[in-house]
Image 1 (cartoon, rainbow, N blue to C red):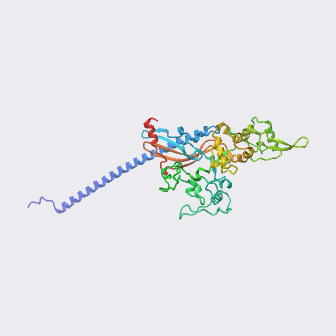
Image 2 (image 1 turned 30 degrees about the vertical axis):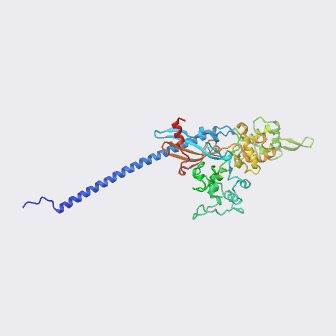
Length: 467
């Protein structure tokens, strides 16, 4: 009997199992290949995104370097760095074969010129320093109630004694369900840290500029339609952030960087400069009679009573008038402190900030801002111009001079490094400090997560038209 030509049921089952196993192996292999391809593509994409992010970072750093070069080389009294689109807007950095990289430097809200954006930098000394401001100054800030002022003073002072409407035990939680925040009893590091102080809200501190980009975005100018709630007036309200700083100080040096002579210190040699004999004699007289002054401005049109050779009291004039005032203010001081914290730059401060000084009312603040526009930078290098240009009289000058300066050493701005045509970008908020001899970045905050600060199509339009 011949064997059957058809395979047995058992053999057929075994062949079917092998076929299924092969198909499964092929499917698994395909999945592995697809997974590897996806992973490679994802890694390539991530690598490209990381490279683009690093390029954006480098372009932004180029903008920071340009700011440092600009402010270091600026002559005393000049303020061209406040707005210079040719230097700070859409500046080309490099071409990597895929993207052309640029940077833009800008700062927000110019109160007196009613502009929301300037392509330049801001002087931190143009604002009121939160850590050194006195209660009378703070009460003159629009929007600050006595309770807010006392809460702020209790937060930054070094004692544990609570003011009547302040507090030394803690502040309210930032968000429901979170712990209360302890009162620091120390300085604020940034203006945004005002949000840690009881009563200070985001709308009060940041106004409409919730993304802190210094620009009026569509959602910040549409009334109650989309957050934040704004007044829709076409003008950016950046809240208290436009008036305050937490990091301004001046150096007690003259315009050439040399330490000033302390009028009150008999051991401090008089400056080796040509001074009228009447001025040097007056300073010597003050030292001999141990008559102390609180500021060099007190020498303006001053007199002291001394006895002559016959024992008769006579008035000895200081010899300091309009002609001598600039030199005296530059070379003399009344303290040995190396840093003078919280002085307001009279050449850059807005009228609102100037009006926080009790001796300066709003009309005088506006007169100062108006007068400085027509005065050359060379004449604005010391405070003397306020008196020389008859903006204030001698009495008022002596009252306000101790609160003012004519230079800034800390500068703030936003910078974006971006690529065209990809649109990749990095955005930073920056403060640079010149007070240490060499410029340094004192504060750097990455704002990239808050979104693109403005369209980059202006660069593409310029490229297309050859502009």
